[in-house]
Length: 161
Image 1 (tube, rainbow, N blue to C red):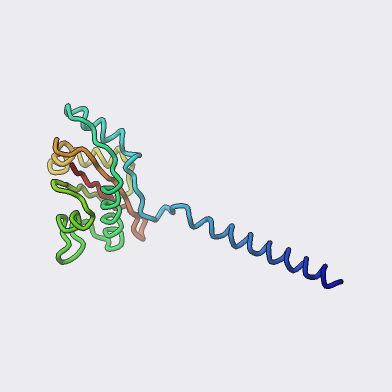
Image 2 (image 1 turned 45 degrees about the horizontal axis):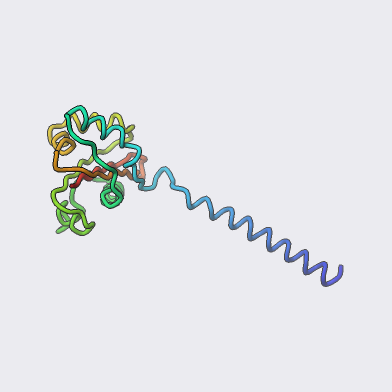
C-alpha cells in the first residue's frame, strides 16, 4: 500500500467515525418523555372553551408564563412534592417576581399522568382552581409538565394579566 492510499483510507475511516458520532449526538436535541415540557399551545382549545362557556374572552399562550410554569413543574418533579413554594423565601409571589410576571397572577398545580382534558376537568371541579381559570383579570397563561423518576407528571399552570 502506498502512503497516499493509506492516508486516504485513514481519512475515510476518521470521517466515517465522525459522522457516526455526530448522528449519535443529534438524538439528544429532541425532548425526552421525562423532560420538562411546555404545553401551552396544546391546551389552547381547552382554555378557550372553558372561558367561552363562562362568557369570558380567551387567554393567550405566553412564553414568559410558560417558562415560570416549566420551572415549577420541574421543581416539583425533582422534589416529588406538589406545592407552590420552592423553599424558604421562595413562595409563589417571590417566584413570579423572579420570573418577571406582573401581578395579579395565579397558579394551578396537579400531579398525575393524565391527558389535558382530564387535567382541566379536575381543575374546573375544584372551586379554587376554577376561580383562577375564570378570573376576568387574566388574559395570558403558561402550562407545563415535568415527569418524576417514577413517570408521574407534575403540572403547573400560571395565569397572568
